Length: 425
Ligand SMILES: Cc1ncc(COP(=O)(O)O)c(C=O)c1O
Image 1: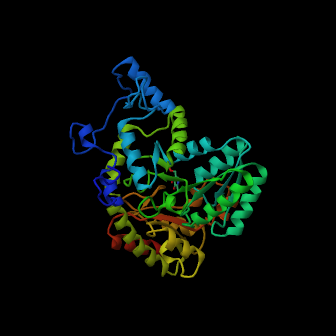
Image 2: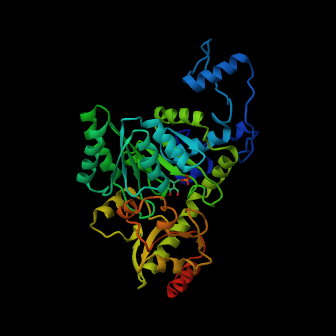
Image 3: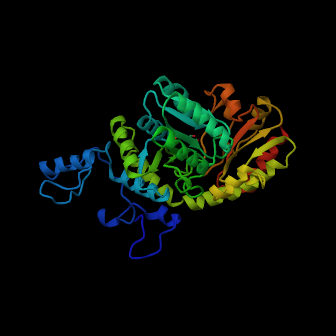
């Protein structure tokens, strides 16, 4: 289970990732969670049906006779056993009271934004931010009358305060939407600094802006946003947590009351995580620590090979952050590892980048990241294609920038292929 019992020391995350959320005695003693494929659930009586609904919609804990309600499942769009298991496990990994799991990372982010923001409100986000989140902010939310302000220097208190002041002048600043490390530049955000600035603002506007952090690039084992002041930890589980490039999923963890609001909107929107994906997710989370450890070791070797190559202009690998810089200080405080997805920029432009990509065969040309296999893409023409060039460039995504998600293959094979491809550029 998620917490230690019987006075034992709290369990490590590697242990929680294997078992949290699953209680075999509730499933015939099956050693592993069964997949529960049903859309609807039978009620033992009409009164129990009413009690289950009172518990789900009103948070009722006791029935009319004063007895504790042991709420059952109602209908899979509301919740289902595999979903509840994933949520318990992710809440444990994210060190949060509760979690809501979704059909994708973007289902999570958009439902969260629509839960927290109303016309007239404002939101500050870090830049760059994942392209679909950028479009959500700059097309959907602005279209609904939400004021959106970017901050491109998320380590600089003055820049954050300035962006927050511009936003707050337009309407109550409800949310700092952060992504750290940023996709694809690995730019870091100082979460604790945002929290301090949010606290300062509480006095001015009566309510502290909430802080959400997209933790997709590092995941729950390498970065703990809640411990640095984030209210909500968002993860595209499609990436490292899913880990095999065979599913789409997402989650947001945080205080129970906030997550309850997100779940209420999810019930209406119907974008929950379905049973098969949830079952796969439980299985994938078990091996997250070993997959990520191996991928991180590989990434360090690949990044070093790129760094010393004359045709490579720069490598945005967190492990290379210079001592004494603000980014390095945040890295040392906030991150337990450099991860295995990073970007690098070739000498030249799009033509050089394309020539390099077309030489690769072991390393696959595809969007997405965090799978067991190594993937590479050209963000300006793929993942960030729909983001206007000015916003792309402001976020550091250049014509010759490539994003590499290093997998768990043998690093020598990856490096040999990269060196061969660079010869052809
Ligand atoms: C940082 C980040 N956040 C969110 C998402 C969206 O996740 P999904 O594709 O699961 O909707 C992605 C997808 O690449 C991402 O890289």
